[in-house]
Every structure is written in C-alpha cells, then in structure tokens.
Amino acid sequence: MNLHEYQSKKLLKSYQIDIPNGQIISSQIPDSIKLHLKKNTAFVFKSQIHAGGRGKSGGVELINNLKDAEDFISNQLGSKLKTYQNLPHGQPVNKILVEEKIAIERELYFSILIDRQTESIIILCSTEGGTEIEDTAKKNENLIFKEYISVGEFPTEQQINNLSKKLKISIETYLEFKNFLQNAFKLFLEKDLSLMEVNPLIISKNNKIVALDCKISLDDNALFKHETLRDSFDWSQVDEKEAEAHRAGLNYIALEGTIGCMVNGAGLAMATMDLIKHSGGLPANFLDVGGGASAETVSKAFKILLSDKNVRVVLVNIFGGIMRCDLIADGIVSAIKDVGIKIPIVVRLEGTNVEIGKKILDQSKLNITSADSLSDAAKQAVLFSKA
Image (cartoon, rainbow, N blue to C red; front, side, top):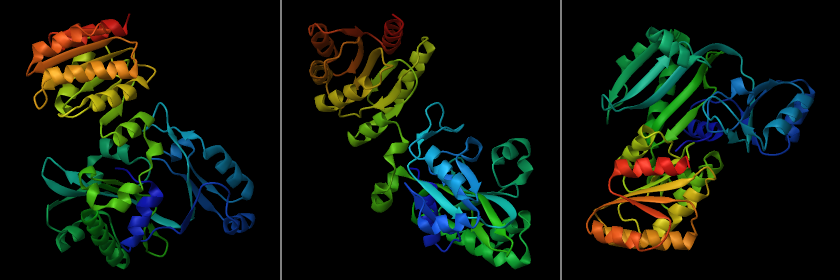
C-alpha cells in the first residue's frame, strides 16, 4: 500500500527525522502563505499523487509570487497528472503540499527495502541523489552503495560507518546521519514497510540531514496491525474498478486488453493471461475470485469486468477443488442472468463433477461457450474478441 508524500513525511517526523516545514492545501491558498508570497518568499509546490516523475511533468514547481501560485493550484487541483510511471491515464491531484525552500549543500539518495533474493533488508545509498537516480544505477553501479541487514537485526556501527564514508559525510554531519539512519530503520521495522525511499536526502547549508522527498510503501499483509495507516489510503489513486474489487474482497488489476479474465487462484490467473497473449489476444485484467467463489462473488466479479467498456468477451477459468464444478456452473449461470451479460462468455471448468458442470452450462441456453482445455478456452476467447 502506497502513501502520499505528505503522509510519508508525517511518519518520518514522528520518528524524529527532519522534514521541511510544509502545509497541505486542497482548495485555496491559506492567508499565511499568501502573505509570504506577496513578499516574494519562495515555496515549493508539490502535487500529491502515487507516482514518481512529478517534477518532469509539471507537478513540482518553485514559486515566489502569488499569481504563479494561484495558476499552479488552478491547473493542478482536480486535474490528472501524467508521469512516466502512471501512463496512459495519469492520477488525480486532490492535494498539494506547499513547503519551505531549503538551502541545499548536497543531495543524496537513500532507501530501505526487502531483498527477497538474500532474505534480508537492504539499505541502498548514493551520492547521486535527485531525479536521475535510475540512470545512475544503470550507467554507474559503482555509485550505488549497499548494506545488508539480517531479518531481526539492526544496522551495526561498522555498517553505518561504511555508508557514511562512501557518502562522504563530514565529521560535523556524522551524528546527524547516524541518527537519521537508525530512526529510519526503526520506522521501517515498526510500521512493516516494504519500501522507504528518500530522494533526495539532503545535507543543508547548516549541516542538517533533511528528507526533501519521501516515498513509503507498506506491506499489505501487515495492514491489520496498522489500521490508521490502512484507513488513510487514497483510493482515488487507483482504477475505480480496482477500488470496487477491493471492497468486494476480490483481487483485481486493470489492464489494457479486450478479454476479461475471471480465474480462481493467482497462479492460474497468470497462466491464463499468458495463454491469451500467446494466442494473439490481450487480457483486460487480472482477477482472482479465490478458491471458494460463490454465486454472489462471481456476480460481483462479472459486474466489475463489464464496467470496463473495452471488454468484448469474458474468459472464466475455474478449477473446482474446494468447490464442485456443478456448484460453480450454477453460480456462473445465475450471475450471468442476474447481471444481464450480452457479450460472449467462454468457460473452462476442471475438477470435481466437471461433466455435470459442463452440462449445466450447455443447457442454460445462454451465450456461453464451454471449452475442453485452457488452450482451447484462450483461442476461443481471442476469436470472439476479434469478431
């Protein structure tokens, strides 16, 4: 689960990590900021969306007068900001973070994340903080510094010293850096984060370590322990169908194709999408209805699939392990009648009572094509999608 920058910084501040003084606005500019702008005091205006690349897309500006500030707010609030990370649709800007301008001496890159390959937590740092960190990682890996921390452990003095030397932290700033790193790591552990990225982490003119920008992602599996953070998630930042699926207890991700997919099991869903692509089609979504899919669950899933106007056919691929295929078939027929589906439905069933399930589908007299295999189902769906 992703947080907005302003939410991430609130967390940082609660762990004694310095951030710029700032204020969130969702409509008009507060009088306190107007007063400073009239005196040509500079502020950084930052549109809040769940995507990087805002600066290159006009979502971050340094402004020192009231007219430019009003223009920025007028152009950004209520619009969809598109960056290289959220194309093609962009994400809505509902809030803008206005922060003080800080005199920067140096920009660094700092992040903490889970490294599943080594089954450890990794701290990544670089002297090349800022907007081009991805290019730095590709072109000059020697400028990316790493320290691995075993799960349950804490960064040692030696590891902190190593990073400090590689980042060329001065003697005057070392204690600040050490406190920052320890507090950041504590936050990462206590809030069950999967990613914390501070870019840039700056050293100010007065040798202070300040988090100028921050991105935080929480582990979805641990959200039950952090209800306040869970409830603060901004659902406007995801596809409306994804939000509706979440409320219905379904796992759904919107894609750009024309073949709606309804599958039970994440692995089976991925295999289904691969076969659709292999057969010359494009999946419109990933949708896992779970192993115990009921008629009500299937009905909700159909409604979500059909809310995507690009969907021209639905491929249902269900393995009847926990539930019998005849019960699943009854649920599919009931859901189709309930929703009133007009487009073709291709169904592949496998498992207990599969023949009875197929018979139920065939006798329904609905626009259902029963497939004998997953490959057959994918080919049938692709043909319907291009008809």
